[in-house]
Image (cartoon, rainbow, N blue to C red):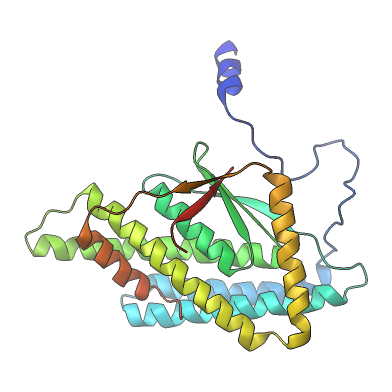
Length: 270
C-alpha cells in the first residue's frame, strides 16, 4: 500500500474532463439529449467505419486512398450537418466535450502529430501528455468519434505501408533500422497533416452555405475556449527532424496513398 501511495504521489496531475462525483452541475451549458439524432448519426458512423475498414484491408494503395477520402468527406458533411441542427435546437448549441486517446510508443511523437492533424481537420483540438502517453482531444461530440476513427485507421494503414517499405528495402539489400521507421512515421504524419488541412478547407467551402459559416466559426471558438479552460498552461515543442532520407521518402509516399484528398510538426503539450 505504501509503495502504491508513493507511486501516486509521483504521478502528474490529470486534467478532469467532467465534474467530480457528488458535485453540483456545472454552470456551463450541457449538451442536449441526442435521442432523436442517435439513429441517423449511428448510420453515418457505421458508413465511416465500413469505409475505413475496407481501406485498412485492401492491398491496393489507390483503393485505400479512394475509400479513406470518401470517409473524410462523410465526416466533413456530418460535421456541417450537425452544426446546422445544433444551431436550430431549442436548447441552444451543444457544448464541446473531450476524450483521451492513447498515444503509445514507439514513434509517439509522430503519432501525436498525426492525431493533432486529424483533430484539426475535424474541428477539434488535441493536447499531448507525453508522460502519460495520451492526448486529450477537445471538440463537439459529432466530431470526436469520427476523428478517433480516422486516427486509428491511419495508424493501421501506416503500419501496413511501413511493413511493405521495409520489405522492399530488404529486397534491395539494405538493412532498415529504428531511424528508418522513425523517419517514415514523421514524414507520414507531416504529409497527412498538410493533406487533411487541405481536405477540410475544401469540404467546408463546398458543403457550408454562407449563412452557416458564422455557426461553424462559433463552434470553433467554443472548442478553443474549452481547450484553454482545460489546459490553461501548454507548451509547444519543436520536433527533431528525420535522419533517414529513405524512410522520409517512403513515409511521404505512404501518406500520399493513405486516402485523403487534397502542419508542420507542432504538438501542444498539457
